Each structure stands twice: as structure tokens, then as C-alpha cells.
Amino acid sequence: MTQSNLPPGLAAGERVVLFDGVCKLCNGWAKFLIRHDPERRFRLASVQSAQGQALLTWYGLPTDHFDSMALIDEQGLHLRSSALLRILARLPWPWRGLSWLRLVPRPLRDWCYDRIALNRYRLFGRHDVCLLPTADHGERFLHD
Image: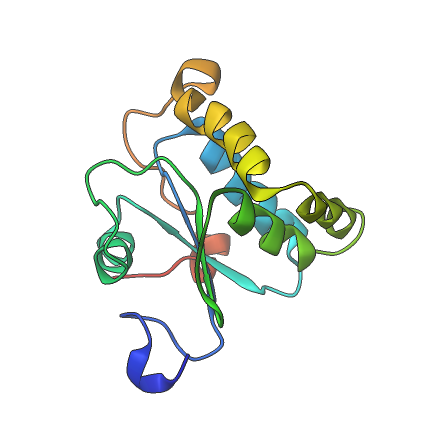
């Protein structure tokens, strides 16, 4: 992406993972990324945050109901299993090894992804409010 067509609040080369901030599974994923991304390749934004809402709007995605994780990188917007596998491919071993799942046809990968995503609150629960990052993780999140 060139500087002129960057989404709001992002710098060139920045990678952002959008996640559901009230979903316990999604919050676990955000914590996993913080723990397993020592090179800080990814920044995070909940879809409920003002920054997350601006990014959803930029890409023409719904802002009131979002049932997928998204990755914004130098190639643009990636959703569902494609986002997950692109993230895993940039993490250290052994997580990078899971990117071989790209060999599975995307419709099948996305079908599996959707089964979990659509039932995530029932399976894992939800928080009443979006969790805030701790002080030591604050720089990993996009801020308004």
C-alpha cells in the first residue's frame, strides 16, 4: 500500500490484527500474539474501539456485528482462515509450521473457521466490556 491509500491511523508497513474485544477466545488470541510475537510484527485493535471501527468502515465491513478476525498488512485486508494463516506464517517456530494448512482449500478452511467463529461466545464465553491492555502491552494496541 502506498502512503496515500493507507487506512486511517496506520503507518506504511504496519500490520494490524482486528479482533472482537469482548470474546474470550479472541482476547486469548490477542494475548497469544503478544506472548509469541517477540519482534512485535503485529499491532492489535479491538473491533469495538474507535480505531477498530474506523478500520472496519475504511474496508466497508460491518461495524455493529463482526464475526471474523482480520489482518491488515502490506497486501491489504485478509479475513478468516487466510488472516490466521498469514499471521502464523510470521510467528517464530513452532507456530510458523502451522502455515502448511494453506494447502487445505480455502472454502474448507473457512468453513471450519466459521464453525468456531459463529459459536465462539457459546463455546468460550464473553466479557461484559472490552478488556483494556495492561500498561506493559499498551504500545501493542492502536490508540484513538
